[in-house]
Length: 202
Picture 1 (cartoon, helix red, strand yellow):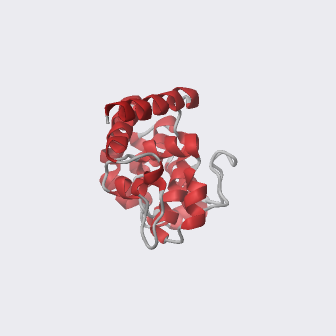
Picture 2 (cartoon, one colour):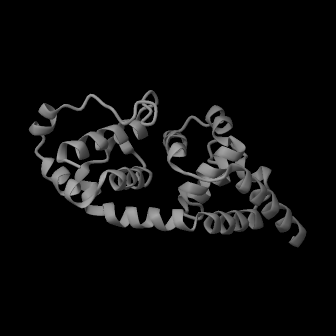
Picture 3 (cartoon, helix red, strand yellow):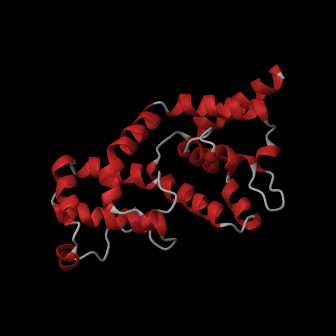
């Protein structure tokens, strides 16, 4: 991993998480980043630092962890990643290592408070419960991605909500999907079981 490689990965992930028409996986992380543009950057020291700390596989996960934490990936500066990167990276690893448990607990807590249809219901000038719960940090971004994969709720909300907060979150959920590995069928069964068990106990 060279400093320029770290820079190219940063540009590729920034494009992926902030632009509708760029797909990191489709383009294999390629971008128009040039060595000339890199050499002109006043912050290239940060890329030198990252290249010493992370190998090729780690740096991809490191960037994903930081971009999914950001409300506006288009403005995420490499200096901010250096400052908060390890905290975000460790939090991301922790969530992914306990993904099934996190999903079970967060979904259980959600459906103990609200019924299924209610959480996606859009009222005038108001975000649905699922979005509010996310911003209250009661639901992590990984659970949002899993729910989207299982229920395809983003497309429905996209039609009903014209709001920069939701639009940014919707894009983040969709862009994160290729980097979150889980068994669809396993989580579909898990979701069904949780909803049924909650109903029995009400």
